[in-house]
Image 1 (tube, rainbow, N blue to C red):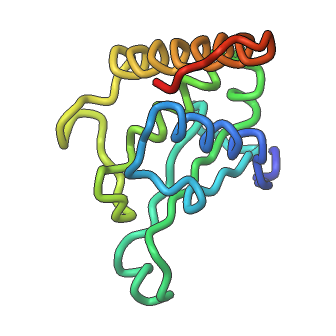
Image 2: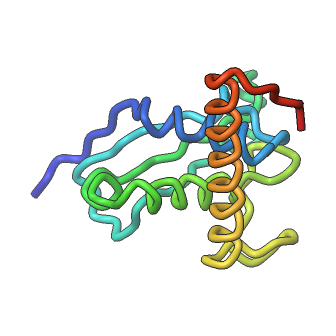
Length: 147
């Protein structure tokens, strides 16, 4: 039987910071979303988000925190676009209050499903394309006006 281990996931951490910035998830403090890569889990999922309940926040005297865990055996083999969709999916579980609680798939406003994730992913892709086009124009010395 495989032994369960986990370690920091700096690549996922960068994706979280990028997605939060590009999609303008202003309610998320990316510095308090910690990313870990696990190996040896028997769960049949790509990733999951862990909350720090209010009771623990008060007992430890810490602000709300989240952990996004990606399961290496399933996540690492996915194409890049699918990995980004998974990061978006997990971030959608963070409520607008950034309270340390986790939104479920069907409640508290917008559903978290393939449709919503794909909609955000298309927005993300469009923003990336616009940013790259702006950088190309700047590199070519063309005047770039702010959006």
